[in-house]
Amino acid sequence: MARPRGRKRTAAEADGPSDAAAAATATVRPGKRAKATPKPEAEYFPEKRNLEDLWLSAFPIGTEWENIDKIQEFDWNFQNLEKALEEGGELYGKTVYLFGSTEPQLLNVAKGKQKYEKIVLVPIVVVVECPFPPSDKVGIKSVQRENEEIVPMRSMKMAWVPYVPQEDRLSRIDRLKTKIFTLCCTQRRSALKHLKIERVKKFDYCMPYYMPLSPEDDYDTTVDIIYPLEQPVVQSFDWEMDDYEDFAGDLVKDEALPEDEKENFKEFLKKKVRERKAELRQAKEARKEAIDSMDPELKKAFEIIQFYKFYPVNALDAPDISIQKVDYINRYYGKAHKRM
Image (cartoon, one colour):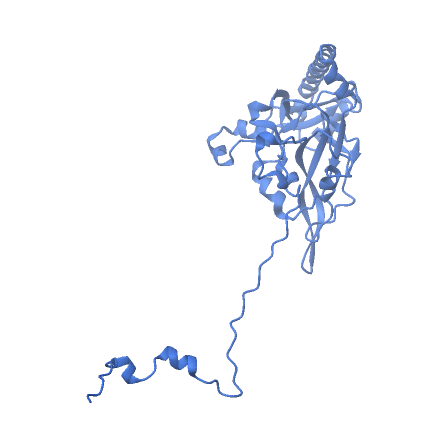
């Protein structure tokens, strides 16, 4: 009988078992283990606090543009501000308006084992507790500017905008009912080079404006002057504390004022004082007129308005500023009701 013909073997089968099969049937030599591939360690990022970037959202008004980046030189900590606005805090559930600023201070700074003194721009945040915006204007004033300007915020590209906490940033904006508003400036820094120097300097001299119903002082007795010389004399004169003759004489002694300009300077000073007194009288009348015509609800809100001034709490990489705190805010707001 004929033998049944078998299937022809392929070349691969003829050469022996495949590499895969060999690997599957190979025995591991005793005493040796297969090396396990190390698993990459999971990278964890700390969860952001709900109001962690609130202080950064408040524009540091009055800070020179070239210094704004210096604010983040240190990892400042404003958890005191966050706690005040969170549940259980003093300002929780209240309508508040925030603006930032900076205070240059000579502080002891530590870097590693090195300690040294340095001028540091300390950020501060002012919180205004009020159901209405405290003002829609800013004041522009400095020793270098003789005249004071009160202009609308929008002319300096500033406005109060709602702040959105971290936990609400995936929600629809139109459904949010925030009670926290921060001062925002939409001026692009990249466009500053196209502006006139005078316009850029206005931002440096800006201050949030506020008209108190009952100011602490009926008037300010200080006048800022710039006496025109080849080297201008820039001074502040208090007509209640300073004497014309002594003031001019001291400038002559310090060689800031030529002797032959002394009498002209005194007349210039007296003229500036008269002008300032006239401005204050007009401002007082304007305030009275504005208060008399003010909406009753707004007037009631301004009667109980509160100012809170927040300094950063100490952080590991930030200077100790515990003894550098003051209540003063600016010439319009005066002093804070509470310093935190």
